[in-house]
Image (cartoon, rainbow, N blue to C red):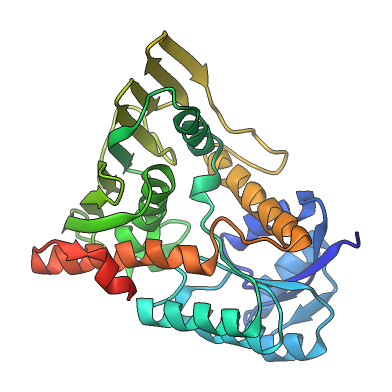
Length: 344
């Protein structure tokens, strides 16, 4: 089968990881890049040897010559770029957060479905090696039916040095990080019926919230807690690890700091190391996320090749984005939010 050709829009901070990963993906390569900033366009083009460079996405789509587009821009441009891709019948990957509003996201999903164009959200956290290991254990039945869980990302890491714009938004941790953790909760324990959230801003130098605690009632009957913080000063910095606790009818799973997986079941306790691979272009402590970027992009190439739906399709991600909207609604109002009503 011929190798898929892709185009990348947005050459910013995180897109470098995506470009590195595309070089390792089997069956796909990036042949064109686009960014409004000439300096970033030149930097990425020179680094990765991409000759086709555009300052305007419409001009790039008009020229064509690619099988998919990877949209790695900030959220304000996502709807217009996805609509552009759909109008040219070009399958699209869209960076998270998928859209500024749930209404925009629904419109984007509907438009791509109408155009018959595959749409995937670059929700890579569920593709991390330790998260996949937890899911594999759960599927095996080793702890029976899960009834309680905790998905925790607590850190004091300075994320603003690399992404200073994060300090300027009225929304911060739920939209930037909590969206990943909520998606992991859905991936592990299934879809959510109701949600209750509380938020706090500890850092006075930022505009948005940097701490959130969210209670989820899953449709399966399980209850989980999603707690995220960039204001937690710890003796050993866990960034960027998501820690997981699961209790089931036959045992428990604990994914603890240092990628230690402990499974307690009827036959005793099993402990394993589920550390991510350190790719040649990756660096600690980011290697966990960087490996997952390669995994999700390989997944995209494989699904485009076989014509089946991706794990984090636009339609699937609506359910995660609904949790983000519900969390902000609940934190502002103090009430519990019905997720089904948001998705209607």
